[in-house]
Image 1 (cartoon, one colour):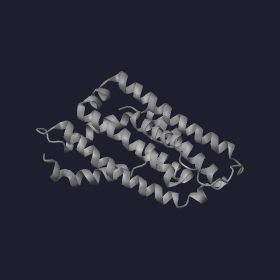
Image 2 (spheres, helix red, strand yellow):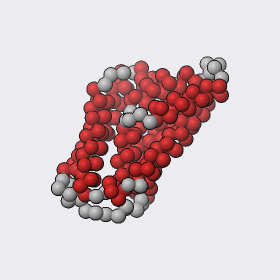
Image 3 (cartoon, helix red, strand yellow):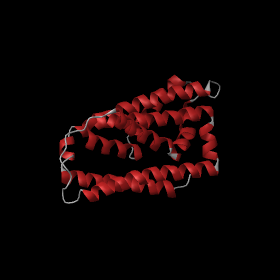
Image 4 (cartoon, helix red, strand yellow):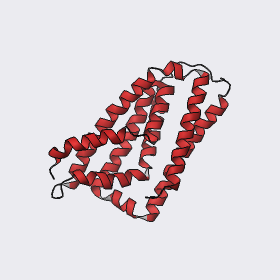
Length: 213
């Protein structure tokens, strides 16, 4: 199978997959609502950097080894679930502290270097510790990689296409949410947002912990 004739199908599949709910979507929505577009950018970039690492792993055959190894898959599943649970409980704790509308009304905070890298690392870790990413890569990408072609180079190129599309999609989503940032940061609304996002993240963490291949 040549890459170019199947590129349209690949792009369509990526857009549909990217628009589906999941940990990445939950993180981006929460970050954009509470920190604005500038605050969401490093989270988006971290998520996409983690995804591209998995694409490179898939091209090199490492993702298949992780998916095939019971120990590696279990370890990754535990780490991924723990990361999501920690983020979820943090949000729930913030919601509990802000019950009754006690959040201080603050302007959108500046994104300093330390805060930027913290948000980037959060997104990167969530994506890299996602065991489903390994399974997705080894199941999805080979459909578009010619059997007689350079597997690693083709996978890396397709990975670049995917992260470019997803970055544009997620930044557009973050920009839309950030437009209502002032409303989201109102004390009562923020408490509800933290409660909802925390519940979603905890639910996703439990799903990762309990799910099978």
